[in-house]
Length: 180
Image (cartoon, rainbow, N blue to C red; front, side, top):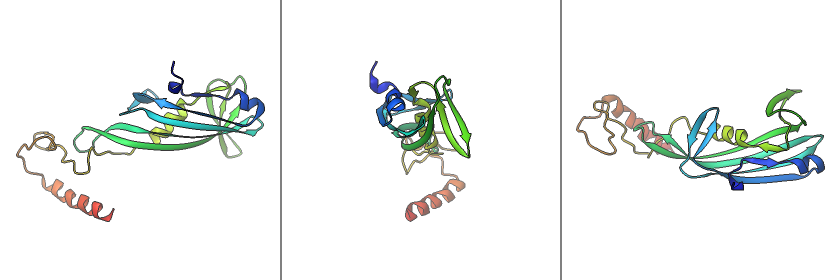
């Protein structure tokens, strides 16, 4: 198996001796989170650093960047969208703990893990998903779908006039472009 495709980092050395461990890799095809998937146009690149801060506590920081294939809010075609996310978490190593568990103590949140091979997939996928835009456009001047026949106005001129509501919103789009 290609080590770049594995989304984990071995922390055995820094748990024992202290210091820092780093890892990087790629995610191909899709990012999976809670049974859902976010399709990718190309591999998403990630890197993390974990630093021991003593007494079994570690500081995880990382980033992930890639192009998610979202649906255009106007024409419903694919809209590749660049997503870049940074994340930081306090970790606490407790041998024998099962999986990852978020805990809170003295109003500070930390993630407990019990195996030195830390699975990073949850951290990476959650950070990526949080940074997804609420809506995407395939291109700034997307014409959308015809409200009468449903034709994609970017691909064909169906001959139906724009609705009055769409004309009003076009003025708002022009104004927003001017203030950018």
